[in-house]
Picture 1 (tube, helix red, strand yellow):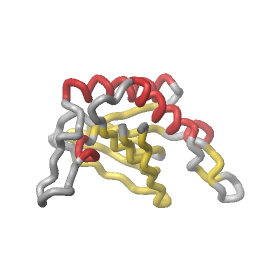
Picture 2 (tube, rainbow, N blue to C red):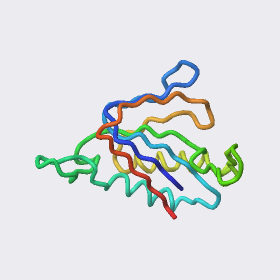
Picture 3 (tube, rainbow, N blue to C red):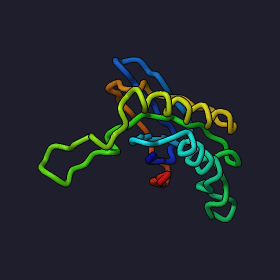
Picture 4 (cartoon, helix red, strand yellow):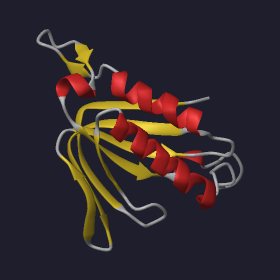
Length: 146
């Protein structure tokens, strides 16, 4: 499991002209799943996200978690994180989990974040989405479970 976390001032995801998820400050998560990912991978990454100290304190040091600072999550499924471009010019997505594997695990991941105390908005699994965000910092972190 691989997540690209971007700290944002605000973000939205739109599908077919309809906003499906929107947050003010918080994290935009681009979530990629690969073969063999399990609930343990999702739990590990969700706990990392909740506890990571990416928000500044009074001394401008990153000492506060999203729970300390406040904020929400915009979670977007992103199979292209497992693109393989080593051969040729067209990416291969063979390392991405099949939709029937990935969607339930992505939903579990989002529910785990909710159970850890975060408000979670989402895109639509498998849809063509327009994601807009104002990156804050910019702070961008790559989190992998393996």
